[in-house]
Length: 218
Image (cartoon, rainbow, N blue to C red; front, side, top):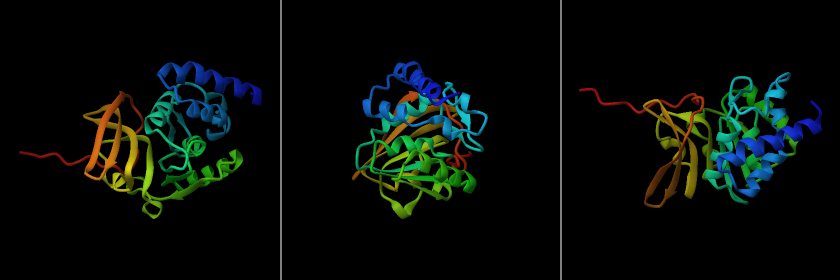
């Protein structure tokens, strides 16, 4: 497919998958229109980049366009924000968020994927993204605190270690699977604690390393 063809596919994705999912933020939509999603999938699978499904990017699934856009809008990224992007694989989510914020730390525990992200992000000109390698569930305390933490997958419960790396007023968004049912959550940190609410039903592949909270056995 030519560059013109990919641009047309990207515009169709925005109009048919993203706008129809109540994603209305103009800056976010503009960023999604700009970032070439086809670069972030394995060679030979570029034609699948704009389908309405999650895509295997070599060991980590890219969120489907609808879920990604709805979560990104929920996070309400602002110019100057610092973002921790968790489990973003080859860097697509970081590339989009980089258009909307000040700095993005892209955390991936697969070193090969992290290196691939560095290479692709350089092609897109995302100079404000720093790719780091480490355990996803531990976050990246070296650059904390963050205004936004974005989860590229599901977790089985409240990610307290990550919430500790938010600034006051900071937001964490992701899919929480409680009893096997996936729901998008937003957590907001305040001086008195952290509040949360469910935003919409959704599903996503689980991120590694997040253990479910132990249950009581009588």
